[in-house]
Amino acid sequence: MVEAQIPSPPAPQKNSAVLSYLGFLRRATGVATDGEWYFYVWMIVLSGIALVGANAWAQQVRDGMIVTNMSDHVSWGLYIANFTFCVGLAAGGVMMVIPAYLYDDEEMHQVVIIGEAVAIAAILMSTLSVVVDLGRPDRFWHLIPGIGKFNWPLSMLTWDIIVLNGYLLINLHIVGYLLYMRYLGRKPNPKWYIPFVFLSIFWAISIHTITAFLYCGLGGRPFWNTALLAPRFLASAFVSGPAFIILSMRVMRLLTDFHFSPKPANTLIRIIRVSMCVNLLMLFSEVFTLFYTGGSHASSAQYLFFGSHGANGLVPWMWASIVLNIVGAILFFTPAALRRENTRIVACLFCIVGIWIEKGMGLIIPGFIPSTLHEVVEYSPSLIEWKVTAGIWAFGLLILTLILKLIASVFSYDLSRKISMKQNVVPEETPATTSMPVETT
Image: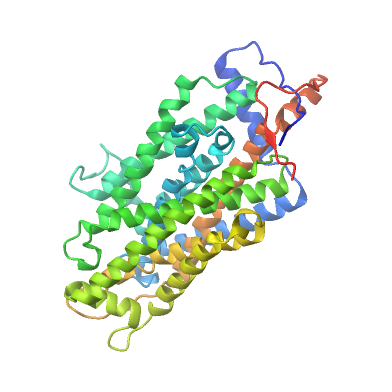
């Protein structure tokens, strides 16, 4: 490991803090939307998919929820499944904060902001998933306290809305403050972000716990009435969040000048190893309880794992999820995961897809099958639902790309170099006070 030779950032302008911050936002917007040809291709593809999703949602608003395959029997489908996964992704995104600040791991400080960026994009995707599930846009007003019928504190969904919006504001503040201080070349004042960092840890746990309570609090759905649901959500979030961060770090290291030490990725892999083992243990504990004791819980599990009365639409999904999770866990436990990029990338993709199925199609949908009338009414997402969900993911990845590009530009001092060139300031060749470690092997 060597210290990078980086130019000092330009001296801050002697103007008001508001004008200085507005100038930062203007320059940040410029640098976040500027790049090589492959950057524009990626952004055009994402924008195109997002527009297709917006068009599909417009058709859904025009024609009603009849264009989806949801029904009175299965009232939550792909949208709520995606919402559940994205909430976990947001919670897991700040897991890097724990070793960085609770255990004072200095090298993890360099990549904590990546986790906060993933959390911001994931919260936006989860919120959009709820909005499209509302059906009519005017119902959105009921999510705003004081305007609509918020039904707080009885409704668990209102608790979810409160904690998700609070979590979004906390992460926006942390990311914005750290970037702005780095842009000014100043050392961040711990009073302005450390309390929010610790608050985000508590908040990350609360958002996914409340999401679990949203399901297990429904007495008419015995498949969800388990005390393990919240711990399972947290364990799987500790896998999907760090795995997504590892992928983001890999892309940034390949396409930007922002390089990372290998230690943070190895720390994340160790977190994933433990969390995936706990997640699989609780999953198999649930399976044993369901099938050994039988009862009302077993009918949904029977349909999910083996089919029921000739209906087996979710069986391939669930077994694919189990295989992906197990293979991903095995790959993470191989020594190659700590030193070979391809192995850890494949393991991350397997675990992310496996958990997306497990927490979505493998958890939300079977909660409604069989119905309260003991009828087996299957559900499979319609083309409109797939388009809308793909559009939400494209929008989230577009936002994440812009934030990561800005982070790379600010932390690698690329933004400072551009400003210095415009101001005809010769960059200094001495290391700055806040140096960045660069991997040499």
